[in-house]
Amino acid sequence: MPADWWTAAEEPPRAKKARRWRDKFREAARGVKLGVRGHSSFSVHFFFAALVVAAAAVLGLGPVEWCLVLGCIGAVFTAELFNSAVETLFHGLDDESKGRIRGCLDIAAGAVLVASLTACVVGLIVFARRVLELVQPRG
Image (cartoon, rainbow, N blue to C red; front, side):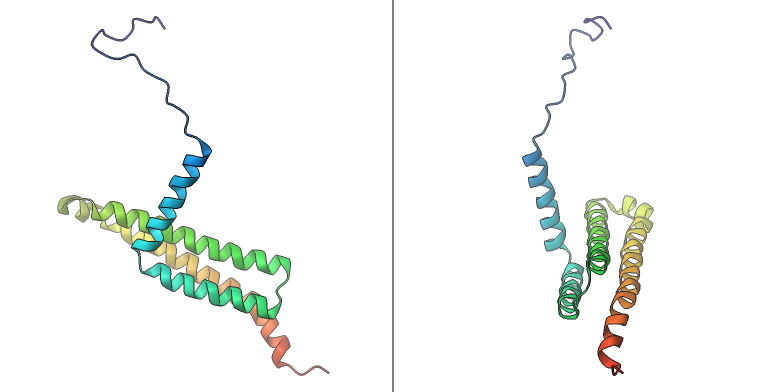
C-alpha cells in the first residue's frame, strides 16, 4: 500500500508497542486482587478450598487425586473471577443498559454454580473412598 494512503490530517498508523511479560503478569495479579477483594463470595470459596486442601493432606491423597482436587478448586476460582468481571462491568452501566443485560449476570452466576457443584461431586468421589477406608474395620 502506498505511504500516502492516509490524509495529511491523520497520523500514520503506528505499530502497537509490545507489552513486557512482567507487565502482563502484574496486570493479571492486580485483576485477581480486585476480583478477590471486591466480592464477598470469594471468602466462602477460599474457606472451602482451604478445608479441602487440609482434608486432602490429612487423608494422604495420591498425585492424580491431588490434580483432580486442585483442578476443581482452580475451576471454581476461575468461574468466580469471570463472574466478578461481569458484575464489575454491570455496575458501571446506566439503568437502561442494566435492564437489557441482567441475564448476563445470571449466566455468570450460573457458571459459578455449575463449577461449584461439579467440584462437590468430584470431591465426594475422591474423598469417599478414603473416608470409607478409615471407618471400615480391616479384616
